[in-house]
Length: 119
Image (cartoon, rainbow, N blue to C red):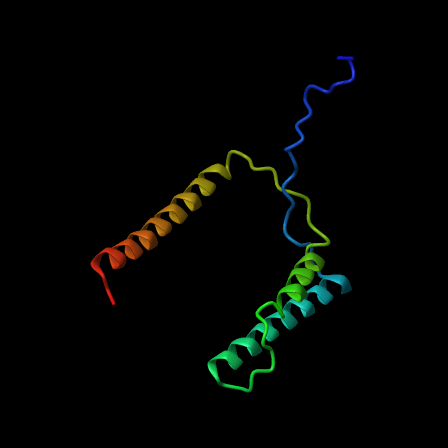
């Protein structure tokens, strides 16, 4: 029974998809509309909570479903994935280093504020 196995098979390996394909088709534009509708619902929710308008939307999850569905529709067409070559690796390392430094600065500032005891 050992002959049926494929030794190079990795179930956790998958191709990284590229960015959403452009120009958008009608399905992707419907996704943009749904995402915008979800953002508008969240804007109405926050405006109602701050007292700027009468509270029309009262639940915090009102805009979540349209936004998730919109993202799924926008990503329904994707460009082929990019193979990371040796020329891309230094750029990726630089971006990773910048992100780590930014996180360290933010966490250091938060820790300083916490330990100083700012009110």
